[in-house]
Amino acid sequence: NNLRNGIYFLGTEVFSLDRVLVANNNAENAEGSGISLGRHGTDAIFKNVTVTQNGAGNENGGDGIDIYTAGDGDLWTINMINCIIHDNGDANLVLADRMGDSDVSFNISYSQIDGGRDGIGNGGGRFQVTYGRGNLDDDPQFVNPDEGDYHLQDDSPCIDGGDPESPLDPDNT
Picture (spheres, rainbow, N blue to C red):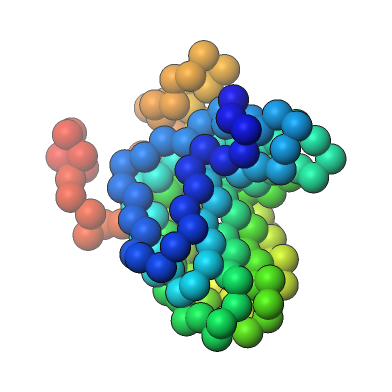
């Protein structure tokens, strides 16, 4: 549990996450997200990131990932590859341009997004979403998420569902 977000980044540098799990972040009595990323032209890379079972404890709801701009004619590029965004509060992924004057290119490939393309909420603004190759909208089949075990079951559709150009898994697949 957290007062607001599992990960919160507000700035102008490149934001990059690789091999990160954000799970069970529940912002009690606040609006919150598993990951909140915002402001001023921050390019971002999400690679091999799992965001699941995050939410908020009030009527404002909560999201898996909340990405927002704050104006100034920002130009952003956000890439998401080999990620699992599943079973989060009100929405799994929310994009919002709060001032309406930023251009954001959001590229999603080889990822599991709960709800598929419809699982991406647009809170307003000029987001160009490219829902690319290899995306899934299936239950990732975690081993035992209620006990914090987010490994994938052997028959998970996410196993070997990632980018074929990615490094091999320990089993050489």
